[in-house]
Length: 188
Image 1: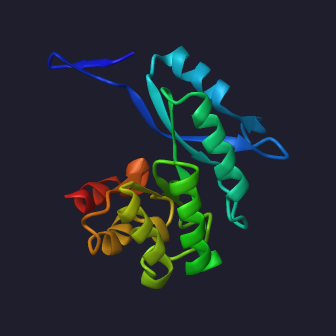
Image 2: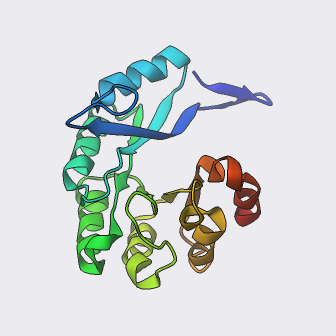
């Protein structure tokens, strides 16, 4: 259901959702959450669309999860905006190839990164170069999980992002509670 703001109709979009399958249920009791469930939830709460990316897992390259996101987004193209998830620790060459596949072949529309779950330094220029290059080449945004640790603090993400002003960077969760003011300062 579109929002009305000053007479302008805007789509209502949940910009941070996860889809995927796990062998065992998560803490909330769900092992699988795919497009049909996401669209049903969107309808229940009156939202138009959602950005969705894979659930986190520290020791994966996310290839299978990214394929699932692309398939589910293709089933509901007017409702689900699929983003890939990348673990840059597999090296620059692997990261570049994975991103080319995700953004070029699977046609996903953004890149999700989580410094805590994937155990990487978001300011490691060598590690992050293929990520920023792919985002620039494919004209897609990056969304970083922020908050819950100093490694994922908005100011940390902003350091390298500032050197790539042509790449949109989203500070997911706005730094969670302890980093909200920092997220606002970094965005400015």
